[in-house]
Length: 228
Image 1 (cartoon, one colour):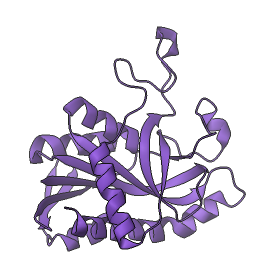
Image 2: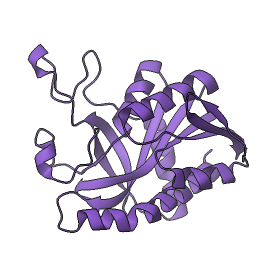
Image 3: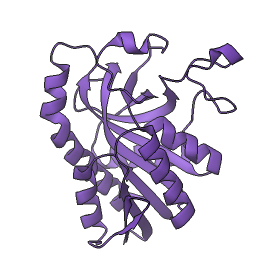
């Protein structure tokens, strides 16, 4: 199996590329890719950069140039409901919180001619949950709301359902959209660095950003070592 891993931050990629035994990467359209192997799987790691365009581009290149069978997106996120800082979260679905084409009959958050909610691969989600349990990690499952804004107030996401467990970040839904269009399986893992709207949100993000990025990479490595 060929596994593509997208990390938004450089800190995450450094440990991942070291683990797969690759120091020298290749650059395609400004995105660096590192090829290696782990546990009988071919692994390609890249750092997409922040935001929907960067992550979409990296995903497209992974699929087109490396024929990935599954894409794993890992990184940090802001909690909204049902989560706390340092929680591990597996996406049950992904949506945009900043797309509005309701004037043409689409639901809020829905890109025309695309699903409103992008659903990760169930078999791969089940496998990752199995590995997390095997390794003794507790985790939560939640909806992910993605957009090109750092969400610091619930007023920014008034059209989204915040009564369910949910988190927000800036890459997941765009990665999911590319995978759905290309017919490639995907899963999204997030690690909560801060909680939206709390008094100390920015301070928490700044304090936990690198710690959670490193933790996310380490957990991703442990998952890869135990995938069947």
